[in-house]
Image 1 (tube, helix red, strand yellow):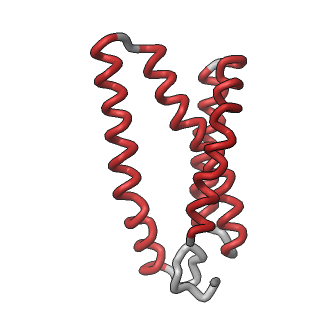
Image 2 (cartoon, rainbow, N blue to C red):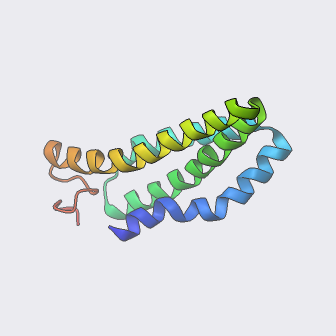
Amino acid sequence: MGVLVSAGTLPGIVMAPVIGLLADRYGRRAVVVPCLVAFGVCGALAGLAPSFGALVAIRFLQGAASAGLVNLAVVIIGDHWDGTDRIRRLGQNSAVLTVSLAVFPPVGGSSPSSVHGDCPSCPTSRAW
């Protein structure tokens, strides 16, 4: 399971500076929209992954896309708001990220096992 988690976070460490450079050069929207699309497509593909190896590869790609979303959200907030409004928006962004990181992994990990026994993301699956 550690490989699966690392596959989603490791690309963010490497891609964050690259995405920042791309956003500065080509514009925020030109980078954040493809990141949104890639994140969504990879999320859908993860549910259809035929094997654990495919799931790890998809999570790696999704992690690269999420690096753009997390980092550029803060940059876009900084671009559009000033003063106390900026502080409030950054706080809201942090709150949503924190709650999402706490709530969604257990929900996502428990739901496939009740639906399908061959789900590669389920530790009790036959796919392991």
